[in-house]
View 1 (tube, rainbow, N blue to C red):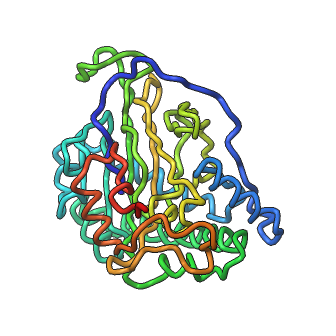
View 2: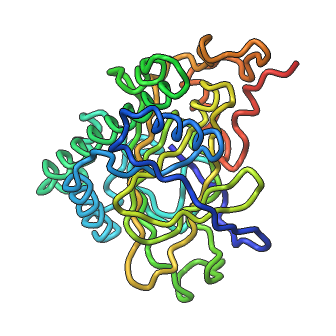
Length: 331
């Protein structure tokens, strides 16, 4: 799950256009694909995948159902309530006072939770919405496992080193729909500044791996290693793959958990939609770097912790903070 920093206009920042890696998974049997994925994780903590195998109709149906939900009157959307932070939210993000220029629906990915929230949305479409989310989550979880297996291959370890975290029956994965309505000078936002208002503030994702699909409206940016914000061109045919905090720990810092944000939607034509799968392990899973990935001259950078411990720590802080610092080992 992601929780943003406080929304505020940007004053002086460096925005730099660079070529973000786009990896074609149609050649996934080639060792070159694994190599490219590992390089992208090391340099950016971010890449796109195309020819990913998730059927187009599953993605399109999920987008259609998402827009159908967000077009509902506010009182109807507010009926989708659950144990915080799950359910529908508008501007208020997470549990620590963060805000943004968006509305969202945050769901646990187990079928019972999806079915429960679908009934809150509307009894007439509950079955359809629940089925759509189930099929989408199943397909995208499969893609996430495939990508994790390719990462493992590129690092010379068995696929199960990473994939078992998402295939366990108790996996703590989440699915989030973010809708950024067009923001204009007449919007209620008191901090409106055309082109530089934050829609969802700077953060890293605490889980293992994030897969994000969006429509054709821009807004996503990643923070490069030299401190520049890099705009990500939208591609409805691709998935953005984002390295999370846990994967940085599991690779002993070799992969980078990238900080990213979304700008407010300045389009006058349509809302921006992102559909985000957060791949998380079972709560009691111990997170540490596997011995086969440790190097003699580079001891572990982080002390072991459970996903439940890290999640609790993350929820207690505003996620503009560097949450992993709390778990670093210092010599």
